Image 1 (cartoon, rainbow, N blue to C red):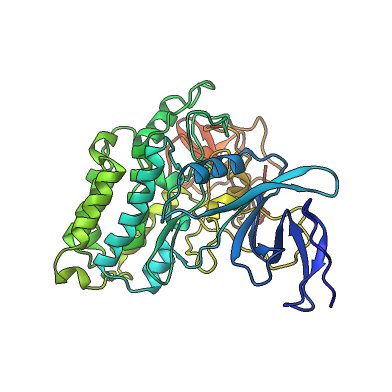
Image 2: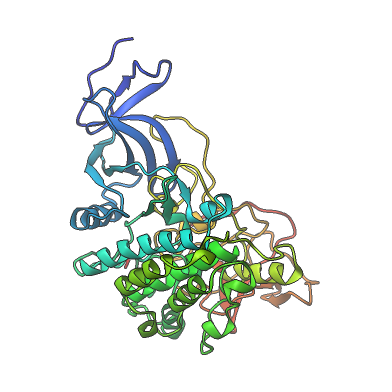
Length: 458
């Protein structure tokens, strides 16, 4: 089979003699081998340098939308911060669509491993291994913070643990730095609700009706998010939702009540979850504390295992996810973890690039402010449509939605508004993408028959 010379301007299909019967194409100098993941924001491919036979593999992320500024953010961060626990940047540029639009792309180290949550479930890790993994992520955050960056989407799906035990923090497309142009037009920066620090959620509640309010991202936000990811990896559960006044930590069930983790590990995880950001310390201080703890005694080599995971109490604890995202079902992602689930924003693809593969269902941990709205709306099949979200508080529609359920309504879970039924969600405003805000409650339309979900700067 003859090879078509690569086209550095992108878009040309070529054939790979090493993998017969599979059509290939180039993006810049990169020969695409197969697809790893896809979403509403872009595609991730496994690729290699088209001019090097048998060259090293890379993860190639191509933007779905022209001039997507998230790609520039990620390039800026990876150019300025090189770290063992961040993916290595291999190249970047623009891919020329056949219709003339230019789509940014990034080539970076292909990190093969499991998400933090899948690693926790499948590796039977010890407390010492947890401490070492978290220390590596904290070191990566310390390097980013020292260079003026805030990651803003630290979560288990954006942390990959390789078979050798290397932990890599992925998906810097939502990161903040002083000269970055805004990504959203809401008070809330890009991120994922269960991982947001309490001060951010309270800010959103306080300024939910102020269109000019903008939350100022802080390095302590990343530490809280890492604490949530660590807590979920240990216990399988999210934290209880934030209230307007009550301290979060006072309501957190310590990890040791759910799993056999060492006291040192529990203490450091709880320190990341401090309600006041000043009490969380710094990433470098956290990394050093985790490393010191990891050098502790033999008790750290006991496997971390859940205690009575089928008990009623534990099932109640895990239901905290439904208070955060009532219509999303929990899941764990593993396998190829090239760039992080959040980067792809997981939405059905309208016009795919010329590589066919099965559609990958995105993780529950998808971004929910500006960047990931389409992902949230298309994540699961639900009997109730979810309205597009463009602000923190969604106003009630002016009229009932077609097919909306009429009374009698379920008295224990529904209310009547505008002569139709609305289910009362288990969250307090700001409702964000979960539903409409009405009379101090978060509501969602109830329908008599199942319907498909609809989809709709900091």
